[in-house]
Structures are given as C-alpha cells and as structure tokens.
Length: 123
Image 1 (tube, rainbow, N blue to C red):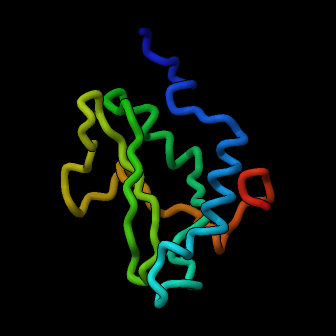
Image 2 (cartoon, rainbow, N blue to C red; image 1 turned 90 degrees about the vertical axis):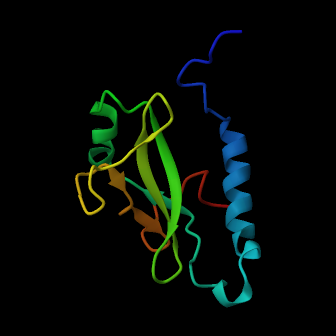
C-alpha cells in the first residue's frame, strides 16, 4: 500500500468538517465545569497569518506542524504551534527565553476576532 499524497493525508470532506465544527459550536460548553461556562474558555477558531507560518515552511528540518493546547491566566485555551522534524521531535528554540518565531501562539481568537461567515462557522 502506498503512502497517501500530502494533500490527502489529513483531508476530510467539507460535509464532515461542517458537521464537526457545528457540533463543537453547539456542544463545547458541555465539557466545561459550571464556573467556566459562558467565559469564552474554548474558542471557535484561531487565525494565524501566512507570514507567521512561513518560518515553518522554509525550515528544511521542519516536516510537521504540531498543535499543542495551552491556557492563559484567564483560563482561556489557545493553540500553540511548533514545528517537528522527521523524527517527530519538536523543533524548539535553543533557549527557554529566546523569541525567534519557532513557537506561535498569538493568533486572532474567535470570539472576539471572528472571521466572516462560512459553512464552517455558521449554523
């Protein structure tokens, strides 16, 4: 059996994506303890710019983009993106305080900065 093409490796049909995003918007608060409901703890989406993602694509060592989930001081969940190499190892800065665009988090979070309506974000 051959490996899937890169574009098909993680692809799902639009109807499945619509179903999944609709279910998430409808039911996301059900997974939260009562004190966290109604506080936008879980976002509907996060948007990263192409410019912010480019360092991943121009780094010859980067084979994957991994998404971790983190939480800020207000308990809001955020996506944290990091590259990974062919051995599936995270590609991290050489210093814990170094800021060289190897880890991304500062996305536009919806809510409050939501994209225009599409099949993936409206009922």
